[in-house]
Length: 180
Image (cartoon, rainbow, N blue to C red; front, side, top):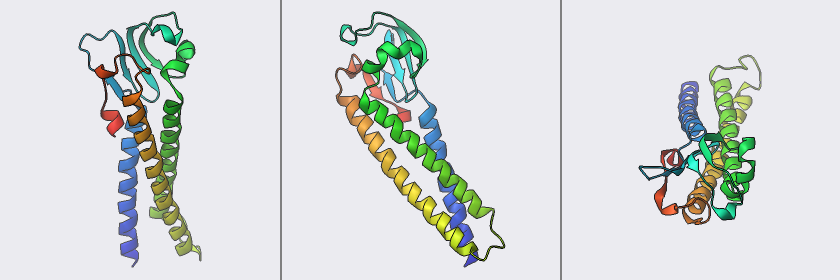
């Protein structure tokens, strides 16, 4: 029985590491939405936490009279005037959901490691503690799955259908980071 439990714990750890790796790559990359133009002038690409422009002049309805060039962190002070236009509520909601998913996955990883290295070898409640940690990790995996599903659906639908969000929506597509 102990060998079977150890095998499931190792499989859980491998699953957790794979999920966490994909989530970190997606979280940190700037390729959620990418422009298809070969001669890009304006919007280039966007991730959850960075956006890249090349001589970008926001549209008149954005009420910003400035050009942007290069890649920017979304919370940069220079993007303050553009934030209401470029990062609508649904985008911020996606950031929150993905961030919560990342935190929950990190907690799952810690729980899996605690179970595998047997942190409670002499406790009389060892089996209950191990079971509790495993159930908590499984529950957090489930919650993470729901959070990330909602985030991906919300971002995919809104990014594809928000014609006033980024100009030339027909020349932008959801890229590999979004798919991770």
